Image (cartoon, rainbow, N blue to C red; front, side, top):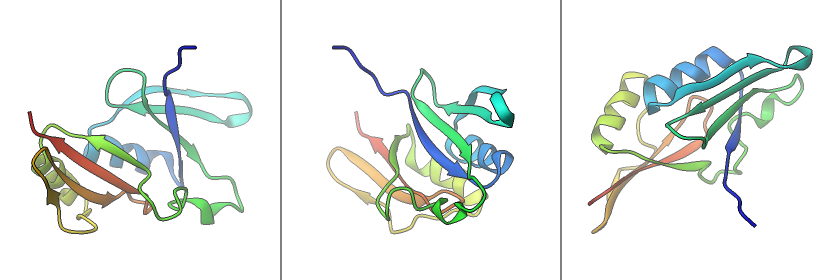
Length: 127
């Protein structure tokens, strides 16, 4: 059986602020953005290829779920070409690492939070 991961759902309060954060801070691009049935917005962001994020505006009454989808654990890992450049872009948006960046023989990494509190691990692999 063949399979591949398509999108991870991220609950957001506001589509436009979320697009700006993921685009300007993490280098995502809008892959698909069209209205769906009943006013639902189909908004997919990615870094190339098919895998990416599906941003969904939280439903009224469920606002407490925004930023807490992973129960305090990382929501995901984003591989970056240059960790320092990624951290600089995020710093320009007011985002700083949640803890000091780390390193081992094969990589450098930093844990950051998106504008809703979701933890994302940025990893630069050494070649």
